[in-house]
Image (cartoon, rainbow over all chains, first blue to last red; front, side):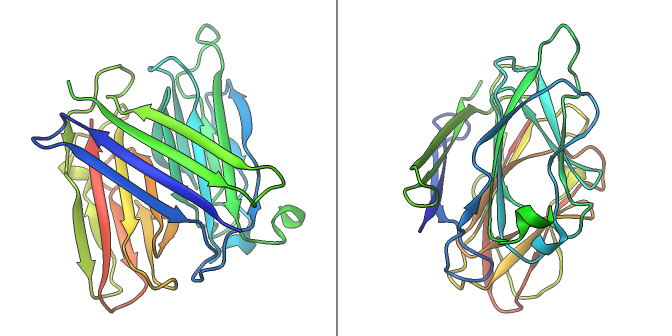
Amino acid sequence: MATTATLTLASTDIAGDPVNVSKVATLTKAGSTNDLDQSSGLSRVHLRSTTNKVLLAANAEGDNLAAKVYVINKSDDASLYVTITINAQTIGKLYGGDFMFMPWSQTDTSASIEVAATNWTSSTGDIPVEYALFHEDTDFLTNA
Amino acid sequence: MATTTAQLILTSTDLLSDSLSLSSIATLTTAGSSTGLTTTSGLGRKTTTSTSQYILFDADDYASGPAKAHKVYLKNLSTTAAEYFTITHNAEEVGRLYAGDWAFFPWNNHDGSADIKITPSVSTSITLEYMLLTD
């Protein structure tokens, strides 16, 4: 059972020589070569809140376990962004079309991943956001 | 204007009862515009031999503000599964990057405290590969 994540960064003109970085990771459980075996599946929400909403609720049992988070802002409008926050710390902003893929430490129940459509207004339209979680905690759903 | 793309492909034939095949491509632009990012740290490596916390990207070293679209790429080059880097943004632990794992995420250096820091899990030699693309 293997899930792979491949990232390719490419540019012909951001530097004097082309950039072409391609990396493959097999998603495994923490500190082992055993594959991650659980997923939330690909989900989609339509954000229209300028205040933080919980996208993925942290589970303290997830501390010290492996979890990977994928989030993409599916808006076609480059100016509309989604603010990503963990435990009141703004990690970054995903502008229209941007995605992220990163590990997630659920250090405690405050470490939920929250999102906000910070510059949304009633005239901008909703911001569609897709996300998926790959993780290893067998009790994740029952204890969430 | 430079054109830089980031593509993510997630695949699995057996995680779920149906195959997973997800592909996303993003053109990396400055905040809220269609203008491509024009600066990068280049691809770098940092080898550590201590479990101390290191500042990888100092928030004060890059243009800051609420409207920035910096992007961070990190990869743990270790081949020992138990070895990891803890990634921290300001004082918040974001996640652990185990051997072979990579991460790609936006970085909001909204103030001078919003450094990206790494903490190796081992005091033996371990190497992180990184690249910062800045707005």
